[in-house]
Amino acid sequence: MRHAVRRLTATACCVAVVILASAVTVDAAPSRAAPDPAVLDRVLADAWAATGLPGMAAAVTHGPDVVHLAGFGTDGRGGPVTPGTRFRIASLSKSFTATAVLQLAAAHRIDLDAPVRRYLPGFATGDPGASTRISVRHLLNQTSGIADTGFPAITADDQDLEQRVTSLRTARPESEPGTEFHYSDLNYQVLARVVEVVAGEPWAQYLSRQVFAPLGMTRTFATATASEAGPQAPDLADGHVLVFDGPVARAELDGTVAGSTGVVSTAEDMARWLVAQSTAGGGLLPPEGLALLQSPPPGVAGGYGMGWQVVTREEGPRRIEHTGVLSTFSAVQVLLPESGYAFALLFNGNSALADTAGVTSALATLLSGNGEAGTPRSTALVSAVLGGACVLVLGARTWAFVRLGRWRRRRAGRPWWAIVPGIAWLVLPAVLLAGLVPLVSATTGRVFTFWQLSLAMPDVVVLLGVAALTGVALAVARVAVLVADRRSGARTTR
Image (cartoon, rainbow, N blue to C red; front, side, top):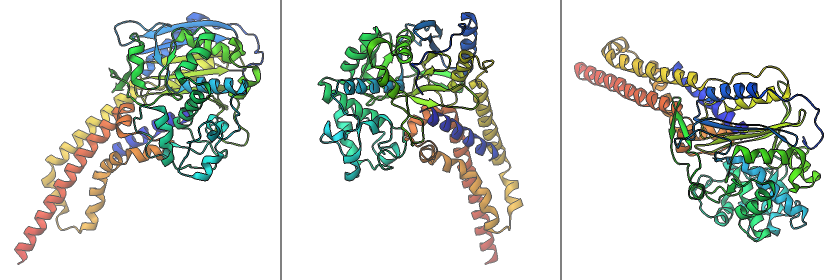
């Protein structure tokens, strides 16, 4: 998900430019002094403010110890964000699902290398041969070959997990099982169904009994659909989207979230989860199970373990992490095995332009002792540039309409081929707007509806819309006057 969000942001920036032109954490960690809480608060507050998101809750742990809990901003319901505020944690849910599967494997109730069909006899994709070879391990590592781009119904709002799995019969695998990494919620939705069948109880109920309760995560729960969260938690923070750096509250898009994105939690509870993942505490999994959870399969690019992404960068500390994004919430959880620190950041808002990755990087740098924490990119600045671009485009097109007569006289008598490039440039934003969904799919490997993209980056969509509407209108006007001139000239000649 981290890569998809970065690529989506890059796509948004490229679109704006075009328009303006026209391992394992259970080992003992080295001992080091804990960061000053005041410094932590300052870094977090500055980084959060740069995102423009309405609220953020943070949890920081070191080994078995919770060293910092904090809340910033508002919950959208008239109160401040606190470490006890509930957030949707989106794709962080996958690490909980993976833990449930490995618990059942440790109890010899699931064989990770067995075909999925052993547990779900009706499981099938559009490739009958591949369907028999996809194993539980492949689903956990996101190497099943199932991908968003091969499943036309990925954006359908199925309300039943069993129905969702059944619908995969129309999915076209993008690669041979076990050979390539393709991130998709579908893999973890199938895993949730495997948990239900093997355990004999709903996925959410299993997590509550076998994962949340043993860790004391009393304010954490899971739901099968997004709409179920509100009735279960009246105190759930309101989600938001950012429109030109202004947070706008709105309901989360509904749909199937079991296994992939359905957990609701707090910073306090996530601290307990981070301790368990860092130290093999809580008795959820034996150390070898935890190591498997956080280790990518050999020979496959992507660095994805089982609900955790292993990130190795030249410019920063090695991290084991997972990001989460919904239409109105975002989150990240990070383990820093070299220093023994871990942290989680929960936001009650989402924007492709908000540099939440910069917040993660700043805190990871501080906790790793690898230099000064940087400042994330300012969402307000990016939004101001895009807003200015809207005004500039609108002004330029208005001026072009005012000077239409002059343009007409200057082009009089020119051949059509000399005029076509200018007309094509005017309609390019409309082409980009119409092709936004496949463009994002091609650059991220994920599939989103136009509405989902509009919520993720409304500033870009508004800019595209302004440029598309005014560009097409101006192109039509220019073609109309040229056609009128040529008809008039033809009548004069006769």
